[in-house]
Image (tube, rainbow, N blue to C red):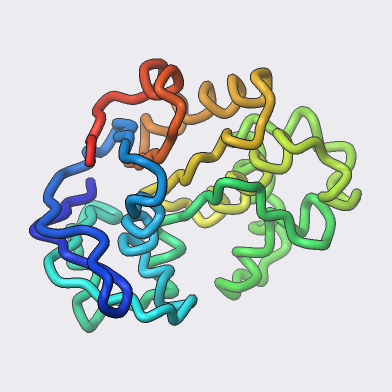
Length: 221
């Protein structure tokens, strides 16, 4: 669950959202719809505090809460560690983010940052994440190959697997299929329908047909 209450935010003197409130429920795909340039990406970055990495003059008032591991957290309360938060609320970008390393190392990268040093556990989690991202059957024999050799659609599923390896409670999807062909888009949509069973998914998309196919709820801003 994600709960947004009376959210007002912006950059410097510019206000992007004012008095925004809605809830995204666990086990559902909630689609966010708004015209281009109206702050949909800003909203996603506010949820997992990614703007703090960018240092771009972002400010906000209001409350953002999320249920993570069965407990509701105020995401801007002082005890919250932003690094922990971004592991539990994963962000999938519009264009696949592929690191200049092997397929297997890409998926394991988050575990390395989280200081998971057990190679057996790492191998198990990498396989589970790739299976959950519907990619294991396609890459299990070539985990040592450069990730850049994958197709664009496979790269996006690899990015999803890299997020899933840390077992996040929430997925923030920022137009994850906008650069993909229809076949790759269909694979991602099928994957999202599966992933929502155990997570909250917030999806930004300009594709109204896609929203009709996969969204359980639509928030129009």
